[in-house]
Image 1 (cartoon, rainbow, N blue to C red):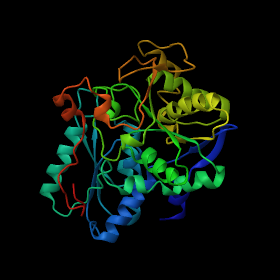
Image 2: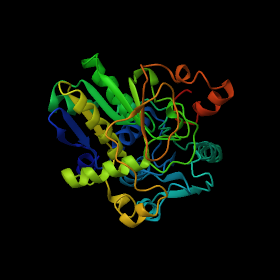
Image 3: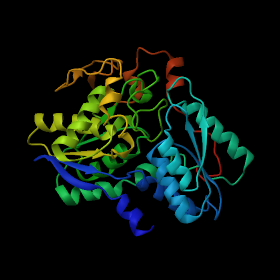
Length: 360
């Protein structure tokens, strides 16, 4: 990897409070993208000049595009019309990647539709490499470096807070930290209408976290608490990071910081770490734009200082902040009220084997 990309994936470490250290990334997904490609090259799953294909509308897609350009691989990214914006699409194409935009009238991201497109394209072009970020163990494994950086900078870590999409960053970092600190408390940050912790998947205003399927890399039995942050609470928290710290970050970072600051204030003797995965450049015309915010139905809302506690997963509005003591259980244990059909639709099964050299 060239020195620029190496620096780009290295987080800035700073304190949001005396007992709260933040790892703020320019492009966090370079960590898993690099390790997945490195391992695929080493194991013979990715031949020289072979095409790479993945489903992404965000930072993993950008990371793969940067690495593919550096290593001279053709890249195809499958995204959804409800997720991709023109400036981001232009940046991806300028790096030489091909974009396939799947029409998504539901505005939920249509992950199943995108995965189906990928499987069809791989069948047409044998030898294509699919990183499979949702079930590839190299995704969480790549965060060993983040865990090491946090320990070197802070010593003891009692609580880790992070948002969840693929499950890689939170579960990967938590796994390594727990090998050093067995009593580590892990808090997952999700949003409404995300299937990750029991909501029925649907259109989500807050992007960059959540998912319409449940990835294999999300290990529910490592999670102690789940917080669902409504988009409006995340937007306010994001702007506070900018005005209070000069940290121009994205709303995924805002959601994580909101929960971490609440936990750290309630547990002043605990050393808390939070992962801030995105920067604010992509949100200049939305989260940082007063006119755009004013156009949203229901905005503004009252800023919440603490979450509403739930006894089971329940969807609330965009001005909400709810939490559930997850207690390291598997997903099915927290969805006892759902039917088997509900669960089979919400829980992802890894796609069929696809020239990646990995079993299902």
